[in-house]
Length: 115
Length: 119
Image: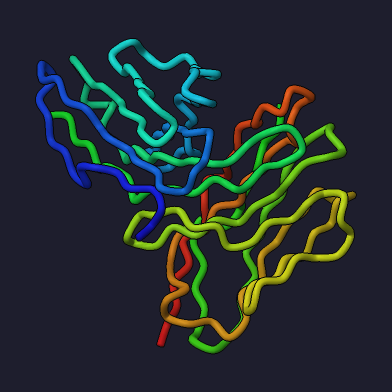
């Protein structure tokens, strides 16, 4: 039990497809994150949700659409992606409040290939 | 803006030996946190060790320890008695302290160091 579970582990999709990545955390955390990990680049923070509200959106193209229906679940909806969007997408969670914070705990990622 | 630099793309170590991974960072802040994360082939990013900038004592977690030099903005990771399971990508990360509203600050990541452990 990793605490943060991502599905699917691998995804191959065409540029016209619509798919969704799912993340679930069992740690009682109040913040969740989507990261993109590409070869030879630092991890890129895409979105941050705190208490189910999006608090950060780092200039991510609109073909990526996050959804956080509750504090335990986070989705990343994908549509009309480009080949350069192929990467490892990592979900993470943490507990953050005034004066208290924990490290981010990560899922195992979804390896996305856009063909 | 803060940056994190890991100057060693690849390192190798013999099993049972000691290896040090380098990390430097640039910031104008005085309060922050530094982390080393490990990413094995399973891809899950796992926290190895953390250091609060206000603490002078170097953090230690079993075989893992850091050499934190605040003035030099250096944060190296030492792995003692290396084991085959230590083979992974190691990432250094920086995070500002929480802001006044209690909001998390994002992690700034280095490019990583790939560590091979030779039997």
